[in-house]
Length: 407
Image 1 (cartoon, helix red, strand yellow):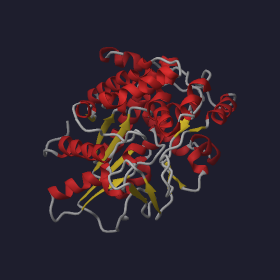
Image 2 (cartoon, rainbow, N blue to C red):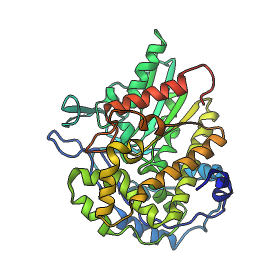
Image 3 (cartoon, rainbow, N blue to C red):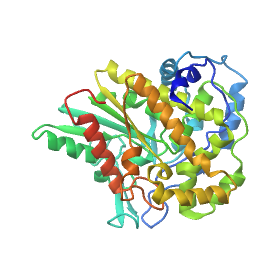
Image 4 (cartoon, rainbow, N blue to C red):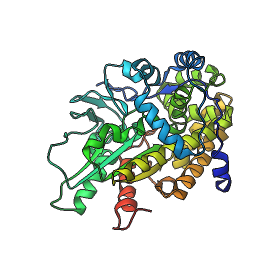
C-alpha cells in the first residue's frame, strides 16, 4: 500500500466483504489469585449465523464516496439503529455481570467496584482495578463543579491498563497537566475499556460529552483494532463474507497457556485474518480513517480538539524484545511471519490520510523502537507501567507542548 494512491483506493463506492465473524474479544479478568489477566473468547459462529439471517432481509447495500461520509453514517447507525438483540450479538460483553449497557459506547464496567489482582510482572506484584460512579477506570467521580480543563482518553485494554488506575496513560497525563497549571482544576478521564474498537470509539462524545471536554485523545492499538472494526461494519450494512480463520491456526495457541493466548489476541488473530483476506485490510484502513475523521468532526463541532494516537503492537513497537516469539508462534501454526508486518502498512496509510485531512496524529512507533526498556508486559503483551508513562509523556509533549495547534 502506498500513500499516493490512498484516496483512489479508499474512495471506491463499495467495500469488499471478506472477514467472517466478529471473531474474538478481550477482557481483563479480575481475580485475586495469579492468573491470566485476559481471555480469548470466540463468538464467531453466533455472529456469522446472525449476519447470514440479517443479510437475507432489510435494506439494500449502502455506498459512500468518502471515508468521512462513511464515518458519519456509521456513527449514526450505531447510535440509533441497533436493538438490544443486535447489541448482544455485536458486544457479547453485555452478557457478563461485570459490565453495564451504556448508550454511545454500548457498554462500560459496573460502577464503584474494586478488584485486587495479583500480577507477578508488576513492580508491586499486584494492582488494583477500581471503577468510579460512571463505571470507568478512575478512583474519583466527576463533580458538578466545572473544571478548568477536561480531557477524555479513549482506547481498548491497553489504554484501560493492566495496572492500577494511577499508573494509566490518562492518569499520568493528568499529573503532567496539573503540574503545568498550578491552582487550576484539571481532569483527564480514562474511558478505555477492554474489548473496545471503532464501534465503541465513535460514541465517545455521545456517552461522555456531558463532561464538556476540551480535548479527546484516542489511543488506537494496531495489533487488533483494525480487525475489530470489521464485524460491526459488516453487521450494520449487511455485508456477507467468506469462511473464518481456521481453528487449526487458533487452537494450538489457545492451548499454549497465557502467553500463547496473549499472542493470539494481541497480534496473531488479526495477522491471520489479513493474510487470508488482503482486501479486508483495505476495508479496515478505510474504517479506521472514517472513525478518525468522524471523531475529529464531532470534536470540532463542540469546540474541542482531537488527537489520534497510534500504538504499535509489540512485534513492531519493540521487535528486539518481542518479535522472535511471535514469529515462532506463526511458524508453529504453519503460517507466514510476514503477516505480523501487515499492520505497518495499514498504520502508514491510516496516518497519512488523517494527516492529509488535517487531523492531529501521534505515531508512537519511532519512540517505542528507540526505547531501551521493555514497554509491554512479557506475558500479557499489554503496555506495562513504563509504557503507560512514556505514552503519556509523548502525548503531553506533542499535544500540550506549546500554545500552537497540535501537529
